[in-house]
Image (cartoon, rainbow, N blue to C red):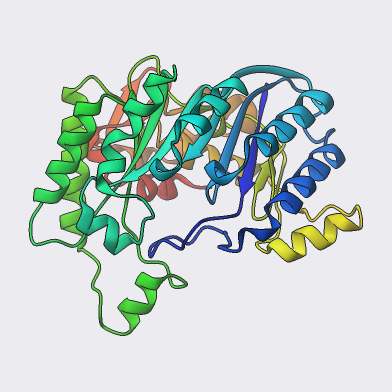
Length: 373
């Protein structure tokens, strides 16, 4: 099994926090789709004829694409890859959810929407420079349900620097009330090449402190757990039948192909990335040259990635698997560190499997790096 990620590098406007690759010049969208199709054809053997179970349209803003553009990409995949589709996800912004768009996506076989809500507070949305309104946030899921969509994920951002937690509390209550089935939530972070980064350097903005962010993360855990969500990955909360299959496969180390500018790929032994430049991507493919740069991963690299991603999930890491695949007795190798972590109450043991407690999830990356080889 395998998955395909398609990066659509266009947005109506630049969100003040976003460091992903995108352009607000929409004039080259059709040309970009043509080149994405070309890359798919040129890389049709990358996944060694593995059955494609998941397709994920990310960005950027894939919901800006016309129906025919999405259709052409899906047709290219069907024609050149072995397909056994179990999930096709489209990232969509609330302001793009017209009845025409929703019906069109449904007709194409898209069965899961990842909705960029971020907040239900108009002041916060304005600060983030989001294109949609708070009212459009509230109406998004209802609109999608009306045309027959049953799987939705809702993106929310916590850590907005406000004197108290009242805005985040309200966002969580509104989100839960809408019953999305899945919530992905990330802390507001300041990246250098964003408006927030510029404001911070100019002394016009101060990021919330770690304790404030940790408190909001714990609020997120409490609200979702009470409402029947399972925190199956540090930043992802789903009802039992609504886990994101594409992302779950990624966290489990299953190969995936990424196409489009800045997209990453992994075939089990090699990791690679496309350039973060629309012009370079298009110009390279104009010459039928792949814009892909690859690196061979050492056994240590692959193991460390397994530790980092595995410990972020409810499935954790398995010491028997590590022994068999990497010829390493990690349990004995890191026994002293693990014993200290266990005393702190950060770990959950289930036979040969190790995962993190709620307390440990606050320190997931630090715990994983302490176990790196």
